[in-house]
Length: 189
Image 1 (cartoon, rainbow, N blue to C red):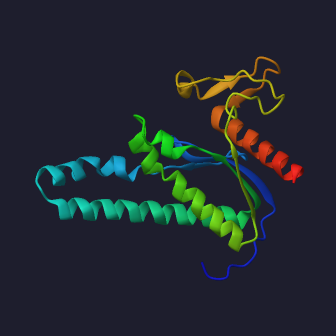
Image 2: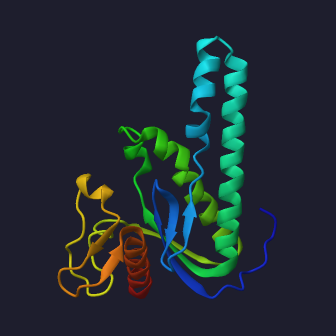
């Protein structure tokens, strides 16, 4: 990346990466994940069945280019707006071996984190990755653990804290907890 100007942004933001939305920010903004591979899956399969490997390869390259362009634009916008970006450390390599593999690879989490990282360095933005452990289950208001757990809890998009009664959007709550953990790690250094 050519010499980029330092950011003028003053926002601190936590980001929870996901499959329904590519990223959910701690300010409530959601970056929708265009599912290019999922939309073209039938055409790719058709080309592969008919032994048209060049057309299948070209279609996959087009999907990869669209994804990379989208991720570049979103990471660029975030690094221009913020002075601190904290991202949950999703184990995408581990999840890519499950039944969610196509969705995980289509989302492009690793690429997004790499783009955020190098653009943050160029713009003098503080970038941190923190553990996502218990970020969804912990109430961002009072710190009590009691939200949706495990794979069964993935369908629960909103939940109410049993301690303080606050209603949480699952992803925004996780992003707020990720931002809090990022502030905590910076305070320790």
